[in-house]
Length: 153
Image (tube, rainbow, N blue to C red; front, side, top):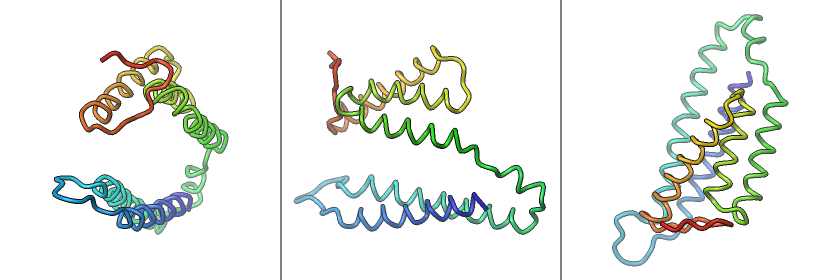
């Protein structure tokens, strides 16, 4: 039942993203990729994954017994810790900077999900954050918050 609710919620979110993406005005002149492209891609992918989740949930629900219901229980303390981590990330993003906040966020989420290798999580988070930062900020020209420590590169 939980998977059905979550999948339906994500499908609703996908519809909202797609509707809002179509409200973004296209730029003047020729652009190979306009400002709508990424939101449309995200909304479309979210819709596809949501529909797959719904189909799987209804297929599994048709043959589910009492034993399956116990396996679907949600660990709410973990969910609440992840929501708190996401809220902290949103608050820290601009003042701390993208790559710094993202590195800490990755390590915190990994810890909440059961990882006990803090150094590895910080290194992986740093590599992913820097790679994403360079992709968006340097290559695509999409400015991300530099934060406290500006990169010299």
